[in-house]
Length: 291
Image 1 (spheres, rainbow, N blue to C red):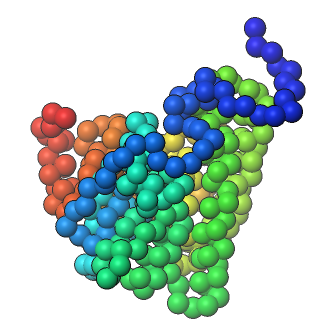
Image 2: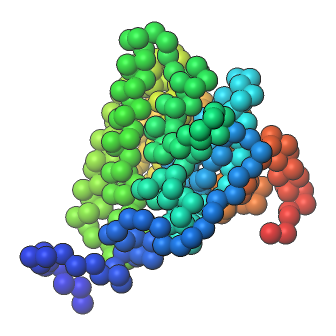
């Protein structure tokens, strides 16, 4: 019998048994738990990530830059398995003290530059290569508005709705209902905006789209949480139109595969070091590799 009446204690204490599927990696302290160096590949840009929505943002961005002809955007991508606690290794914590994927090291200069937080990485790369960020001041502001909208809104989708609907060890009606309501409000915000705009910043595809699509595009397309029916995401006509258009971009299709370690084998590219890695992975459709 579950006690539905809960009175918070005067002093909170960590219950290590609480937290569901991700209890083993959730803790109230920061810092490294083990000494573990990160591998370094041949390219100046070194990405350490996983193909969650936040990770997909960066691989989509890098693939878009390469699609645009920016050869300096070639990168090595290494898998960080958050279920195994890789994000708490000393090498990763040195790049991102917050122990969250993705994390990027830019070794193109005299001194390596560490970049963490997915929105910061998108902005850093956009400014570094002069791409996917409007040059017109008014359009740039709109792009930044929506970039920061995503950074502030997605925690309600992932840590709120996604956790309580999919991962929580106990289904709590109030929590699911509260966050479902908020996510539907967010989808309505997007749908109303996209009714009058092809992309988030108007007619120009930008880092705002790249930030939002892996979360909200995946939600309406039922790629995360298997909640499309529950949330009636078919109602959001313009979000679905936008999701489909971006999903047809070759860079988006490649970006979804990088650092992916689940699903169909031909949809996975656990590490990425060269464009030819995608071609090799395509062969798995005919002859699946033995992992």
